[in-house]
Image (cartoon, rainbow, N blue to C red; front, top):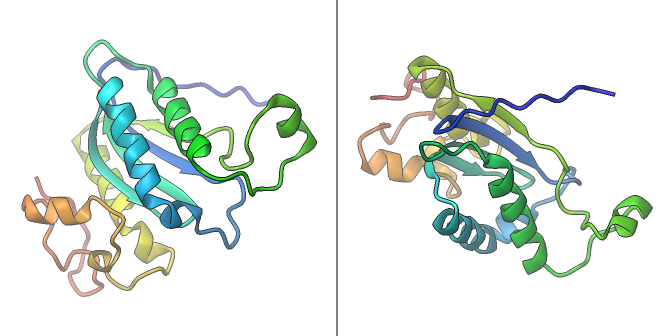
Length: 176
């Protein structure tokens, strides 16, 4: 059995990838984007964290978040987000015998990918990855055309130019 090790770092900044269980031809996350947003805001208000970057694709999401000082419990935050979204959605998914026996829903993959951001270059690379993802997956030709992203807020703040990730700007880079 694999030995999954998590990097627990109080006040750390992390990159996450969280997937739906059924990824093929599934647009659940964007169909229920308001539910996801409401649940994330509720969890954020009870268990503070700062969102640096976030993108929601049809069947997975990526984000870069920062935990408060002296707090390394990202697992509780993800458990609450996944549980909150699951409880808000109608039960239409197919359940395996194991999930049914455990009282689980068949919406999310059990695990998620987490990466502790090491330095400023790592932060910039992961912010760029978050925001270029809709282009990478062929959902849009320009990052600015994807509505389910913090990219638009970061453009307003002067972090990214509006044409970033549009195919004509050369090397991609997060601006300080």
